Length: 137
Image 1 (cartoon, rainbow, N blue to C red):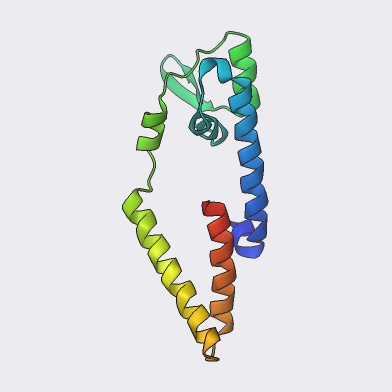
Image 2 (tube, rainbow, N blue to C red):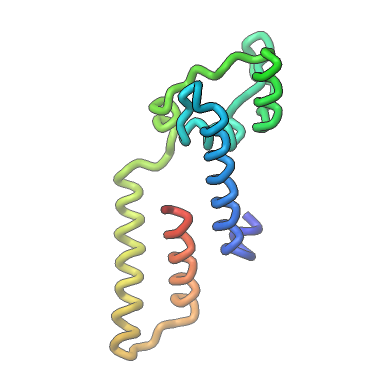
């Protein structure tokens, strides 16, 4: 959260890094038909090391790869639909956020065009909205 508050531009670099990492995972395990959704799932640390059916801890990508290559763990049997079902964002929520942000941006542009005052807080919020749009995409 500190990066988001102090240097929001760094979040874009972090997102790009995750995107490239997910692409590498998909390319590496293409024989097993893993999608980008599965790769992000693994990057988020959602793969757990079980012992007698009880999860002990989450695995990093490197640990997962080493254990799977050594045959010490089985390949996860989770579908893309099951992962997406766990998502907290639905189309309605995303639509409301897009409408609110669009309305705010439109108001700021209109006020600027009519030479009305736009506060510094609104300018900063516009910049953050632009960064969020890039991250959201």
